[in-house]
Length: 159
Image 1 (cartoon, rainbow, N blue to C red):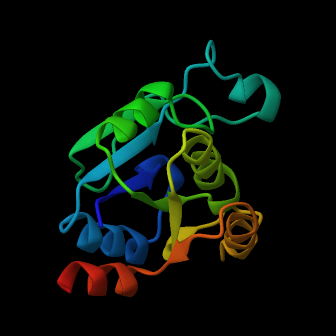
Image 2 (image 1 turned 180 degrees about the horizontal axis):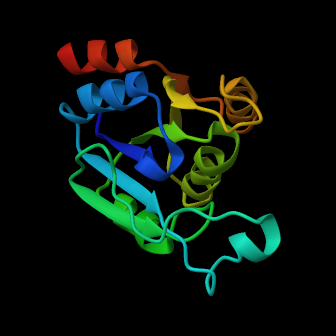
Image 3 (image 1 turned 90 degrees about the vertical axis):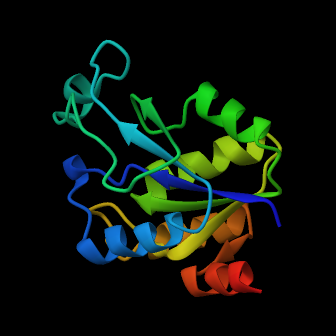
């Protein structure tokens, strides 16, 4: 199956747990990988004005990727989605931080673009509201149905 891994916001700003970074790295070494990094630009997304906090203005992905896209808010950029579409993949594996916000937003963007977003459930962490990611995983299953685990993906790659 032609697929790509989309890593959502695994960057220092959001203090990802080491197990997540290590797990994403192990998978990214085996598959074409794209990463998004969320940077602050108050002129684009008014985090400070509306929420009283904001991501860093400079940061980088903690996992090496074949291509990295900068975003200024919850959703993926049109450029990111277009790049993925041009790859002609059958499935987009999604992992990363804030399962019920930024990761879920990636799922909606991918789905709306006609792609098949598939959440890697054991490579995602929720926001401070739900660090387990359970809420985001349940929302993902409800909206997109497609979920997998790192072990399942690795077994498919080894087959």
